[in-house]
Length: 263
View: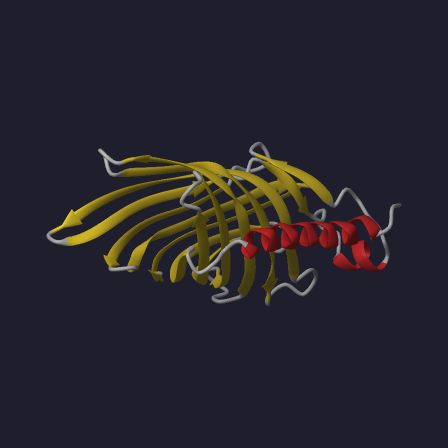
């Protein structure tokens, strides 16, 4: 049996690479960058067959921070997005029995097109997608906790439309990113974390993810109400996270309303 060294290497390697790339991007995000700070409240639907065969439903609260920078002389923009959330969910018989928390870091580059006649702006590119989190089932005494760790490459795009209502300038934007290939940690059904990390009983716990192992989607639809150099933002935020690996199924579907400020 292989030791837990590969699992530990994955955690350290993915984390270090993600942090290094994010710092490269962040170093270029000066005061001229467009920044978004927002909070959202969502309904969430969670299935994790490592913890339970039942589907949990509840409420999710999240924080979103984003920075986008584009030089005047360039069509390439850099994007850095932080998304952290906690959720409390339960089943019909066990209300509020599942607690989850995750942090998602996305960073990448986009090529930008502007169509002044139609007042449209399009950006297309790709982002690195790092996720670290976990879940705890208070009703499960055998294997009550689950780790979530993954890294993926996401093609991404956003389309914005500038228009006015009366004398107030507005911007409507739809943005989406789709993870297509990556790596993730996954235990087998019934395999404890003690076996993996303490006893070193590795059993293909680092898996390749793709559209075939579970299509995923990050999306936002926002309306910006501009006030000089700032804007009040309201809209929809949705995440479809899912994976099939090592005989286990996982999904978390979240759909919510967000409010925030761009400056």
